[in-house]
Structures are given as C-alpha cells and as structure tokens.
Image (spheres, rainbow, N blue to C red):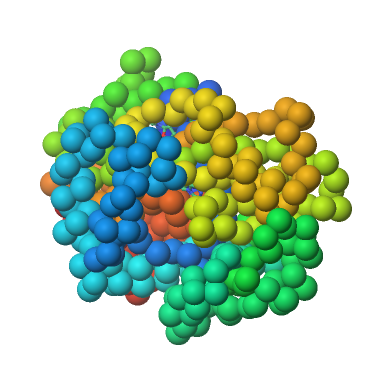
Length: 417
Ligand SMILES: Cc1cc2nc3c(=O)[nH]c(=O)nc-3n(C[C@H](O)[C@H](O)[C@H](O)COP(=O)(O)OP(=O)(O)OC[C@H]3O[C@@H](n4cnc5c(N)ncnc54)[C@H](O)[C@@H]3O)c2cc1C
C-alpha cells in the first residue's frame, strides 16, 4: 500500500512514522523548506493529559464577553474575522452544552493520557533528546479562590487515573525553588505528574530523519499540494511541480485543513487561533526552573527547554496571519520578569514566533476516513493540544487504515461534520 501524508507538522510526521513502522510505503508532502515550520515549530511544549479541557462550555460565551473584541486581550476575536467565523462560532456554541463539553473533555483527556504514554515509550525506545523535563507540569494560581476551584478538575483527573494533586505555596516552593524569587509567589498549584515537557519541533525533525532513512519512507519538501483527485487506480496528489498516485491520502494540514478540504466539498470546521512564543537564553542556568507550567491568571506558559526558556501566551482569532510585532510579546516579558525576575537575558538573541492552533469547533480532532471520497483520510483539528495528542492520533489512523482493533473511545474522533 502507498500512502501520502499531506503536511509535515507534528501530526503529519507522527502519522507517517506510525504508517512507516507498520510497513506501509509513505510519502510526506510539506509546503515548507523543512518539517515543523508552522504550529509545531515553537509551541508551549507542554504534554498535558492534566489539562486536556475543551474550550466549549455553557459559560464560555460569558467568560470572555467583556474582552472578546479588545485588540490586546489575551483571548479574543479580531472583529472582521468574527463575521467570517460565524459558522464556526455557531458550531462552537452548539457543542457548548454541559453534556457535550464534558463528554468531549473526557474523550480528549483519555486520548491525551494514552498519547503521553506512547510518546514516553517512543523517547525511551529511540533515545531521542528533545530537551524533555519529566517532573510533571504545574498550573499555578495567585488567588486562594482560583486554587480551590481547581480541586474539581483535580478530582476528575484522579478519577481518570492521572497522577495529580493540589499543592499549597510551601509545597510549590519546595518542589520548584525558582518560585522563591517571584515578585508575588503563587498561593499554590495543581501539580500533574503524568504531564511533561519537551520540544515538539525537535521530535518532529528526528522522526522525519527516521522516515527518510527508511526504505519505505520519503519526505518531499517545498511542495504545496493544490488538490487531490480520485480516479481509476487510486488517489492523485497534485502539486504544481508533480502529480503522484497513491492508495490513500491523509490530510494533516493543521490550520489549513478546513480550507483545503472545503475545496473538495468536505466540511470540517477548523479555525486558526493565533498565539505567540518567545524562546530566550537565560542569564544563569542555576536559576532555570526545572518544571514547566502555566500561569492561569495570565494565560501564559513558561517552559524550560534544555538551556533555553520558552514563554507562550495569547489565543486570538485573527485569520490566517502569522505576522508579529514587538508589542505582541509584552505579556510574555511582563510575566517572565514577574514570576522569575532576572532570569531572561532580554539583550541576547531571542526567537520570537507566532503560530496558529488548528481549533475544531467541538474541541476534538477528527481522525478518520472522509466519507464519500475513497482513499481520503483526515487527522487534524487538534487545537491547543496537537503536541500532546500526536502519538495516539497517529496510532488511531494507522489502525483504522489497516483494519486493526481500535482503542476504546476512538469513535469520539470519527468524521462527524
Ligand atoms: C502558541 C501555541 C502554543 C501551543 N502549545 C501547545 C502545547 O503546549 N501543547 C500541545 O499539545 N499543543 C500546543 N499547541 C498546539 C500544537 O502546536 C498544534 O496543535 C500542532 O502543532 C498542530 O500540528 P499539525 O501538524 O496539525 O499542524 P502544523 O504544525 O501547522 O502542520 C501543518 C503543516 O502543513 C503544511 N501545509 C499547509 N498547507 C499545505 C499544502 N497545501 N501542501 C503541503 N503542505 C501544507 C504547513 O506548512 C505545516 O507544516 C500550541 C499551538 C500554538 C499556536
């Protein structure tokens, strides 16, 4: 069997890797000059079964109502994009009932836990160094009320078999002494020991190298696929420079998936949700935290990656735009300087970046064959969790294609649009 995987982000490359390991002849088509150029390039690097919560919720429309259209709000809409996004928003609201949103959170939490275990097994098996840190992930709070509210989620995680607990400020300090320098030390945190951190781009690159080294794996870069066409003898992948015939094609185009499939009369509501990260060198390695985490009040993640520090923030619906300006990193600088003062060397070369989360309107990825188009598959819509969900998603698509037994709960990710 010959399979084409469209898109060389973490989802496309893990998919190709699993297919290749199953003995299938696989080719990745990637528009960029290397793999992991878009959302998988410099994300927050958190692998988080402990925070696989869909954004859909009955209170979601009210939670951000006052700031939704403010241009600098960390979570919000560009008003002109909002009008274009009405079908996505309508679907989001339809999936925001208490029953649907909690079922979706349970489904992705289970997928995330399985995926995190598979990723750890892969790292053990291959010995890949991806600047991983394995002391869990911290979700810290600055108010006792917010910390107390976290108990409900912690209880849910424990009921799902996830190793998590709420810790107070003293325990947090004992666990991560770097908080001792904070301007306002957090009052406590949710500590999820099943979560971990590591560089998504590094893993994607290393898997791509393994694919290229295999007899049955190929990576075709600098190739933008314009369409696919079902015909006699298979499904053709058509790019300006070439046309090639395959038995199956898996679409893993991240935020571009919806537009690409729309061209083929397949509906899949995935909106690009923009975020920004800054990766910096630090003034003193001894001051670097050893556990990654999220400052909840600021919607800001701070992650140690080897000898670097990555700070990630903002979720805005601004269309397909990955441009950035110095002003987009004000939150990053303020939070980093307040939580870990003096740690970042702002005068050293900084890697500033913006990327688009491929956010589905019900919070779950679609991992399935596309009904009605023989040989066409999709693995996309992983939102803010694509790094976390990548390995289990790749496993599901491979099992489905080969007609193997599926893990329980897989039906939650079937094509449903
Ligand atoms: C700011 C931010 C922080 C995040 N933090 C985390 C986190 O901490 N943990 C986590 O689990 N997830 C996180 N995510 C989400 C995660 O990064 C994404 O879900 C994941 O990278 C999506 O991977 P993908 O392969 O689907 O998409 P992408 O990585 O975007 O890959 C799609 C690829 O398709 C290519 N492409 C597009 N069109 C074509 C075409 N026509 N032909 C050929 N190639 C094409 C693109 O060049 C791209 O390389 C974050 C995302 C952002 C933006």
